[in-house]
Amino acid sequence: MKQILFFLVILFQTALFSQSETVSGIYQLNFEGSNGIYNETLTLYSDGSFEFLSYKKFDGMHPPESYTYGKGTWELKKNIVYFTTTESDLDSKHTLDLNNTEARFSTKSPRDKSSREIPTTLRIFKSDVEWLVGRNLVKE
Image (tube, rainbow, N blue to C red; front, side):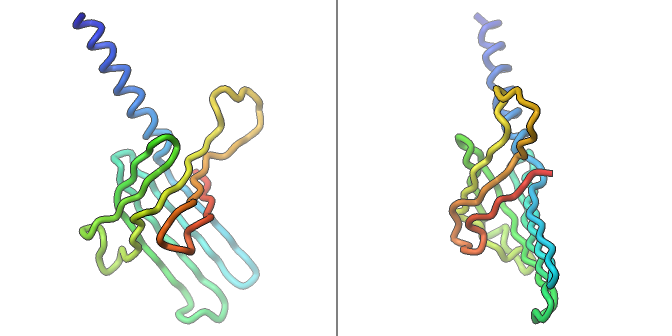
């Protein structure tokens, strides 16, 4: 009985931690046009925390460059990543509140044996920050 219980605990831990390891990483959206640059970087750490950076630089923009930072915690439930920002996460640098932000995690299915490349992505489909909705961030 103890061996079965030990096996189940190990199996549960492996499944739990392997899932967060596949989601954690650096996700980016990069755009470079003739009149400027736009870059978003979302880093999901395996400990459940995240950092977000948005960088904009466009010709004729005042100020010429803009940085927006955010941080907090994330949680994965059925391929949906839920972001939480608490009051302690907000300061003079990290001003972006990502509460009520949700993103769909998608990756190539392990059953797909084809040689085609399917990038791992996070697609933000819900957020109180309107300019984030619809963003498709690709994992590096």
